[in-house]
Image 1 (tube, rainbow, N blue to C red):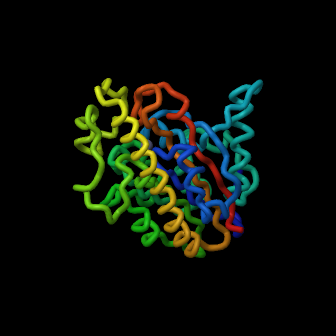
Image 2 (tube, rainbow, N blue to C red):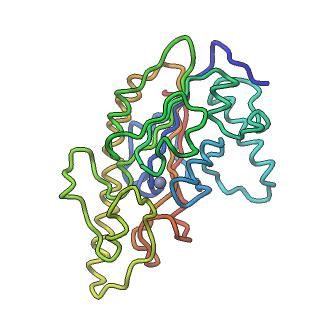
Image 3 (cartoon, rainbow, N blue to C red):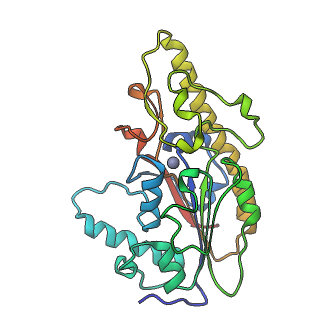
Length: 285
Ligand SMILES: [Zn+2]
């Protein structure tokens, strides 16, 4: 049985919503790289809600290992939590029966548990809000800096934070960009009337102006790359406030399609790029 020790780490899990692996690489985030090397990993799900459920079950994006049983992979993957939390003896069995990481952190290990989420599909009334001391849907869907300003760490107990970051989600808008300037996609526009619909994605209608579509898709992808660059600056503010004994994981809940095979977005899409995500973690060095 894992026990809390004075050396337990704070743990911050940052989910860049919809951030594609190659967008992340192209942005060359200098600050985030301080945590470690960027890995190409695979999400278990193609859209936000099931993916966050999976992440909070303690199963972070996988590296698609071959010739290994899933149960062995889970066991091995969970051992990593001993390093993340700075605690010995954390196994997949530790989570039985809830199989939900925030409950384990709070009730077994005595962590303070907090979630700040950007996408309304993850709102506090959903089942995801289980085992959290605080769980907040942020006022804006795209303002990680507002989250960082609310984070508090105390000496008496370690803290766990889940941050669901929305700048990398469609329409890839930074907090100071007026909504009237956000891009609109013809053909699938109706799907985006409300960000909280979240069931974004699907196959684009065949356009009579294919060149325009390609340009538009490239522009959207560039916006996501810019969002990652911007977030690298916000990450510096986060790194400045976390105590030394803080372990940070940065990844995405799923990828995004920018016109490949006629798809845009994520969700009801079967394509490699909707599952391909960046993954890096560590303590600050
Ligand atoms: Zn998402």
